[in-house]
Image (cartoon, rainbow, N blue to C red; front, side, top):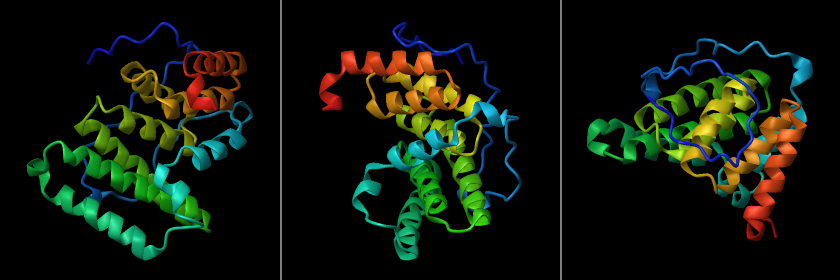
Length: 210
């Protein structure tokens, strides 16, 4: 599939990410196999920036939910989304968004998990479900942005650039995508590109940064 034309205003480093796995899976059938992690030079990734991304670029609801969602609330959200997923093709345009909701639920559970094993478990599930959402609607910029964020959180930082670029090609003014781009570029130590992106965003969307 040809990529949509992208605004020349964005300055991306010459990174060629690996092809994304868009395996067709149902949420209930997500296995526990180890997600293949890109070989990343530990010295080239700033984990502090990825932590910032995890905390600041989560769904808006996170900012209003307090210290942490309880298991019951997670179960309720997951059940509602799974109800839509179980409808299959009858869910129509709602199906990709249902998978998005499932993926975000898993990602939020990972961020709240106290044990590393639990964080890894939920992060793997989140990535697979978000890949499913993307496969159902490759042109949804929000799904692309959250897929990029999840890839970055599981340390597939270079791979996260491809869906993020696509998200910005589809919706170049999206503040969350611009924010994530600055964080990912900084995490990769592309500081000049990150600064240029932040400066461009400030000049084009000053009202969003008040």
